[in-house]
Length: 570
Image (tube, rainbow, N blue to C red; front, side):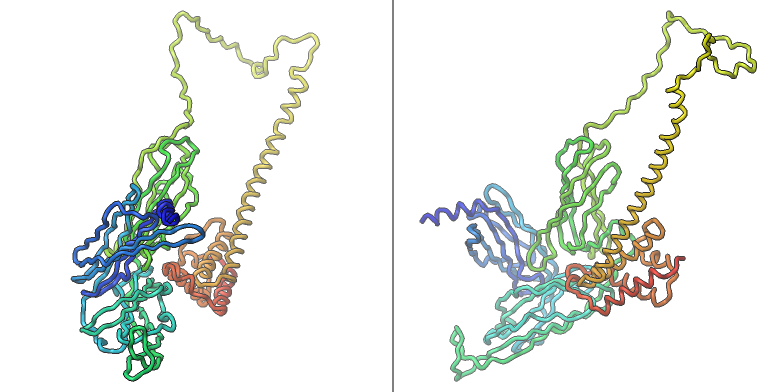
């Protein structure tokens, strides 16, 4: 009884969280998907969450309450399950659902469901078959889209998955499959168990790309009469048999990102986003930081979104930001990314710093730049430069000083007036004054030498820092495990080598960088392959960390760098 009384108290003390999960982001007309509204940290709802989407039939499938003890902490979770049945094809947005807990309002993130025509499958009637589902078959390089591999298994048989389906193909990256979502479906009157494996796919190069085939190894036991083995439902089962079910390959068309209209601050973000910023406090002094929080929400390749730059950096000092991402489970492409950083005003300002965020919208096929609103800000303690007071007219009563009449000039007039000659005829300057004037240039000379030395030392320090940075890039080329890190470090090492020779950083462009040397055909080809591979892998997104590099390819990269650095300058 005491434990039962304490559970609600512990639950309300926990932080409340609300999130929504779609069992699949793709479906066919008439094929249901599940939407789970998960509420954590509170045992009591203050409202009745509702879900209505035009074009989808929404059925409430029940609720489930879960409690768990982890390291002495009580976790209270309420799960509301809805079934969504598409009535027509198209793209549907599951809106944000409001949930009120403890006097606060929490909202889920919107989710997207793409519905294909409910065409008849040729494989219906087979013991098992598989298909790859993509929301669209025309993508851009770097665009992230959800992908499902669906296994339709005869519901009258017993199935056991030996291993996760194997993803095959070249020119794209994917994330590992998660635990499959299972449900029963009817296809032309025949019952099937549908196992859906969800992931996301990111093409890394332009052109025609084949996704798949995707094989899955299973063990099946089919019902047979007269057998002694039975399952939990009393069905007589035959001997287990190994079986491979393969989803046929699916071809997609991948287009390169347009060059025209590309913003300078574009970092590769592709999708649909909303951008905003808030700052505190609203009153600071010069040199005191303003805490800025930048928020980017929407759907797309969040892993390619870096810290947005200031729209007008003059008069501000920025620092590195603390990043955080929270998103829906499943496809993992919908969520919110935040950046928290201090920004210090160095001059008088009347508004908060304005940040800019650029991305490419694949639906409109255009680049979009959003800027944060210029909220009011008061900056105090600005130094005031004194303005000289205007000259005033002299009082008429003040006697005017008459200019002296110049004496008749002769050759002696160029000599200094040493005053009345004394009888002792002593020197006009004291010894201290004389030696001060004599040695006055000495400190100036030492100061000039010190300035030249500091300037030289600063240059040497910058050169030494660049050499250390280049050594670090070369070490990364030698030791990094995946191709993206190796090619990125190789390009940076080459840029630093050119900067060490020229004194200024070169343009971040392959043509300009390679054009700075007289390269032979083989070296130029190798370097361009490195640049192209780096671009593709950086655009490829989250999966690039699993693309391991071979020792042979690593040696080729090192050899290309060495040949480039030995090539003569133009």
